[in-house]
Image 1 (tube, one colour):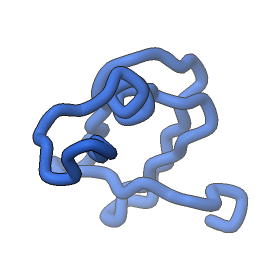
Image 2: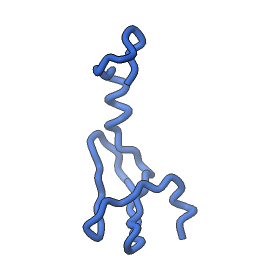
Image 3: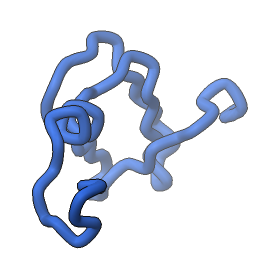
Length: 67
């Protein structure tokens, strides 16, 4: 959230909104309770908040390393 003319501006640029709201293919989430993993297979724009075992799933930065 940076506006070069006013660094304390609460306004976001279109680019910042697009970056923050883009759901990217390949993003993975892990349930810390049961070990279930989900991966985004079709991207889009919006918010994703996956839940499992009545808890939020955690984003995994390197899903290939999870065994």
